[in-house]
Length: 156
Image 1: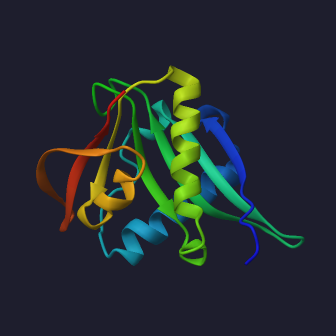
Image 2: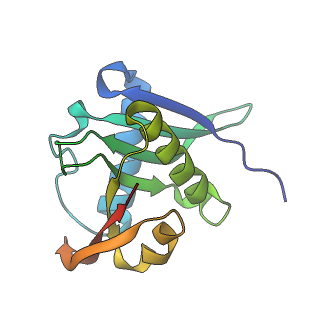
């Protein structure tokens, strides 16, 4: 099996170039709206206050966005920083891209703000996946666009 190689780009919203912005918005729509059949406004007003982690698989012919997360400062969505809009492209599932994305998301968040508690909203079927990174369920399950979710916290 070939080693997964991801070229990470990490920028505040104001530093994204147009291609990166297009890539992340297109992939978020492809997964959250089309694949999960959830018609909702993905541009929720938070992006401009956040950092964006983009993971590209590079080939001689193209650069494909295969992993993405939004790094949310404390006070924007929760009292603590959060990782949100966590996605891996369909073409990159089952090869370790999700694990690499979570490790890199935690790393860049801690580079910005140190070792702090981290929050995320998880689809319930992913509780075990996020648990492997130290996240614990907090609060009651909730429905988001017809999909069962839970809040999870990674304590210090």
